[in-house]
Structure formats: C-alpha cells, structure tokens
Image (cartoon, rainbow, N blue to C red; front, side):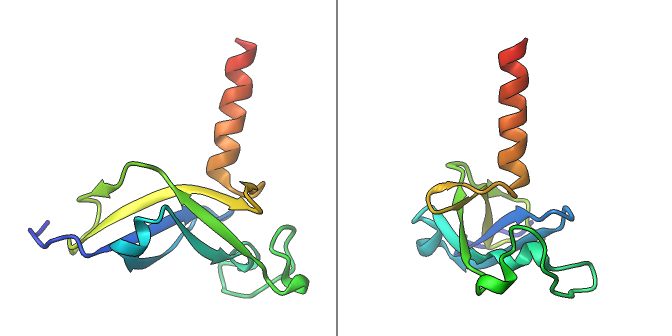
Length: 116
C-alpha cells in the first residue's frame, strides 16, 4: 500500500451472484452517507445480459435504490491506495431492500438469536 492521501471512496455491495458491485465517488460525496444505484444490477447475469429478475423491475424503468454506508470505512483494502471503501445495506423507499444479501443476513441472525 502506498501513502497516497485518501481522495475518493469506493462504495460496494454484493449482488445475488455474490459479485461486488460499486463505484468510485469523491470522498466529500461519500460523507453524505449514501449513494444511489440502479436496481437493474439484480437482473444482470454473469454474461452481462439483462433479464427480468424479480426485484430488478426491468419493465418499470429500472428504479433506483440507495446504499446506506456503515459508519466505519475500510482503509488499506485497495490495491493502489488513495481511497477507502464504504460498505452498507441497500434501501428502497427508506426501507431495507429485500434483495440485499447483507440485510437478509442481519435479519436471519437476529431471528436466530431471538430463538436461542
């Protein structure tokens, strides 16, 4: 890792194929706590074909979803340096998005803990 100052943030989430999806944004933008993405990512296959998968809303104009970042940023995960990484949970209309694997894991663990 180099000693480059952090001037951008890579915002990431995993799709249903467990592929990392994200983009680079200025750190000042990431400080707002969220970034928008198109739900169509959930209708994208390994071959980058766009299919009408449930939740992707391909025929409704591929609406947006928000990735709300965790408070903690990961520094040093990148190869080139000069950026940090923000992970988070997906939301639609200010509610947790059902296709967010991270959110589903949280709900599942919470249900399991309440039973034990």
